[in-house]
Amino acid sequence: MLLETRIPLRYVLKKVRRDLVFVLLICTLVELAIHYQRTILPTLPTAIPAFLGTAISLLLSFKLNQSYDRWWEARKVWGAIVNDSRTFVRQLLSFGGQHPDTVRTLGRRQIAWCYALGQSLRGLDWKVGAAELLDEDEIQQTSGHANKPLFLLQLHARDVTALADAGQLTDYQRIALDDTLTRLTDSMGKAERIRGTVFPRTYRAFLHAFIYLFITALSIALAEVEGFWQIAITTSISVPFFLLEKTASHMQDPFANRPTDTSVTAIARTIHINLAQLLGEEDVPAPLASQGFYIM
Image 1 (cartoon, helix red, strand yellow):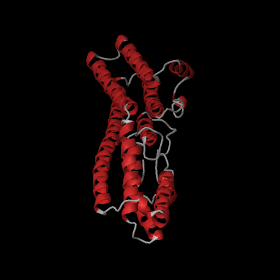
Image 2: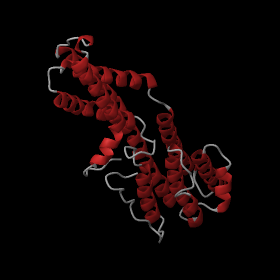
Image 3: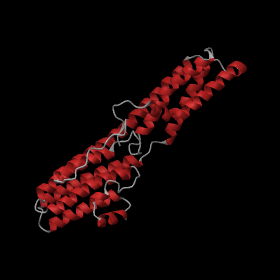
Image 4: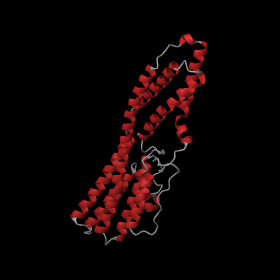
């Protein structure tokens, strides 16, 4: 997640450097045609690129709104995970206080689940952050499943059932814990839906093509402007379009392991701190540090 700090210019330019190369190439070719083969280029009024620019702005606005909705939905899903994780451990401490070892095992596994889910959504090693909170048997069992976070929730359900069967939980307490696990499962499914649903590739391809058409039309319309200034003006105008398009493309994938991601690792670390303190753990980690202008 990008933070409210100065974003390095190098990071910004890196996102559009390839497009800028093509823009400079287009502008240079148009300028050469103006000087050596002026008759092959039509005379375009500035109203035409102005119309194209307005249309592209509307399309970019729509795409940005849709992308931000996906990013914000992902953040809301993880907000629900924070709340339900706290609720789960609080319920365990209230209902199963006579079995501190079982409560501690479930609480640590819930922390591991948060790390495992975040890593899995990004396509990374699920054990990073989670392995140290699980015993070897749990790690081996979980590694054999395609959906690791789902199996960790199943281990939760197994232990809750064992407590209920042993008469350590009332029916109401068992139902309350099961409801919390159901909400966690729902949140996991919502996050996986966002991760697995992609924007139509044709939408970005067409939008990119329209931007290049706009750049070409603008270069021709500015034929009367002196060569250097035509290239400089066209390039400067193109940068915001490409930056907005790139921003929308990145935000539409909030679990792609990029600086624009929903900060699932930082959220999991916050959950780790909260739950470890509730469980009375001595080894409580520090909040996740930012990586300059963003936090993962």
